[in-house]
Length: 345
Ligand code: SF4
Ligand code: SF4
Image (tube, rainbow, N blue to C red):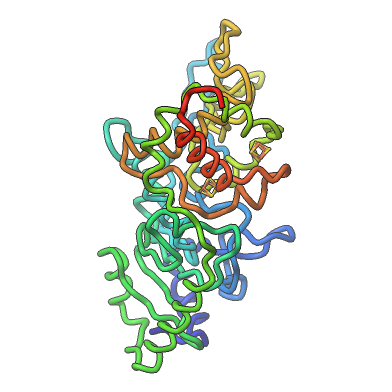
């Protein structure tokens, strides 16, 4: 265990050795950012409006830079990969689990993303159990919950005036073995169990998501997508705040004698996301874009990598300006499937 009073001095030790990224106040909002002082770290929080996915997959990043030489763009400079040893502290279990999905996209299989990999391989994730799940949280619909350890290297549990600290991966156990911790007494173990039971009791009733991947193939041509997309204003907020959404665009930004190739987040909710150079758009309306968002997260990813593209963090539910609730979308999917799938209702 680590007493909450000793946390600050442990953090100062970490700050000497690592770049520490943690929840802190920036520009009037709570977000994950680099901290330079233990005082900035805020571990007593619900969750951030934006997920910490930008730590590995920034909202925009330079991939290469180039300069003109004798009327040609022929000086190309690679941007150095970011291998700074980093501790990502205070990540909620849903967001830590989202990294497992991002790993399957960027760091496994045939195509590896060196930019993501360099940051990911040099970062240790310290997750923090969630003691106050919100009404919009539905991690427990995915056979998960506020104490899920997936994706974490080290897992912290609240035990009153201390945290219980658990090494989940070898990387995490190695850091813990450096001697920052004391042994927890039975009283602390009991207190942690009591807090966990209270957190689990706060979870709202929800139907399991597992199994929905089998219903979706029959709904490709269903009118349900038109109904779901009716009030969407295509602002993209749901995809930008989502810890698992990972679509991006790459473009060359040109100045007179130089330029850079930039990768930036993109959104399947946008009209021009799939528009071809010919002008043809295979997803011409918001209904087909909402079908893609739903099927990608709940059918294609489970089929291709064995994971859902949603961890139930509830951010899109909270941030959507027209209150389009993904839990309601899944409910309508179940209803449409039981009413006969692709047939007009
Ligand atoms: S789809 Fe919504 S609830 Fe699911 S992970 Fe993304 S933001 Fe969270
Ligand atoms: S946040 Fe809401 S309105 Fe904006 S794109 Fe997503 S579903 Fe549509």
